[in-house]
Figure 1 (cartoon, rainbow, N blue to C red):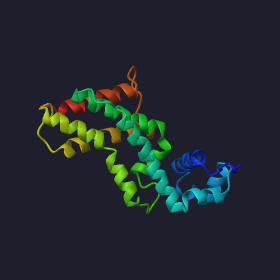
Figure 2: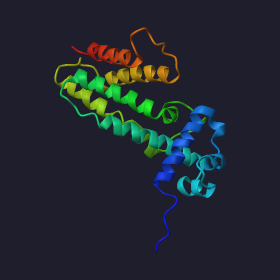
Figure 3: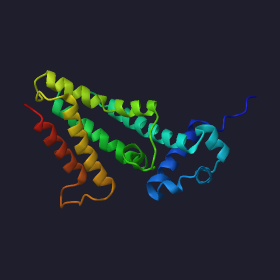
Figure 4: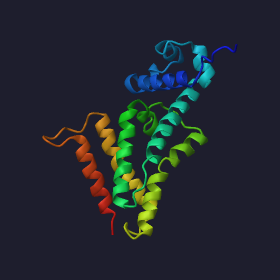
Length: 198
């Protein structure tokens, strides 16, 4: 009878989630492989076996964050209404950030000084904005959006959602009486998308 595999995908994901939590709450100095192994009740051998080294672990965190983010963005089915689709993609962005705040900092900040994703990880990160670019290109071709470079519109949309989500994750958006963050966020997304219309 074969021995059960102990260094499996479930352990890999538990290690990544805990590493992200340590990084986002305690900073890069807290991210030691020995501490991480103890936190997840496994051995440092398991950590080395699954990731190889601390830089490889950080790269895996980056990749996992963008893998989850990309899956949520790709799951947004186009409706054919450019503005609605842009808003829905923005909502998916926020949903991803709120679901995995411990990965968000490694994805979009210099949470680990000196970290540079490898080429494959960088390509994955870039590809996650493709659903938005596709929506924008379709909107331009249909005459719904202004004749601007699609990348300009996409980066503008990204800048808005990233800024609002970062403020929310850091607790910097005050709750207004009767208007929750999610409603204000959706209003801002719609106003931005409509602002790009012809």
